[in-house]
Image (cartoon, rainbow, N blue to C red; front, top):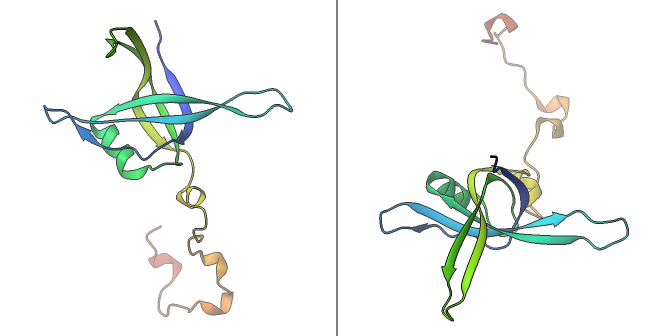
Length: 139
């Protein structure tokens, strides 16, 4: 049997780190995942519930926020419970084994400035380092 889920989507809210009574880190959140659609139709999204434990939960809550694009690899799990009205309920959620950045920080923060780059400088803004030759370089 095979149970593998790979998703990319945007967080719908800031993830919050919680701790179980035994001290295990956990976070639950949802991501909006675009669904394929026919040409000319409006894009549709599914909202997928995700649960992450331990270091994965700590990583997600530290580096991701609402609107961040995230890559999740995990498996689908079901939970059954009885709600306050006595009805049986089933919840489907993805248990995240790994989380990854899908876009650069610059892409995820609208209005942020591009990082400095040597390509922005003109040739006369560099100074020659005296006494060093290419043979002295370690690479």
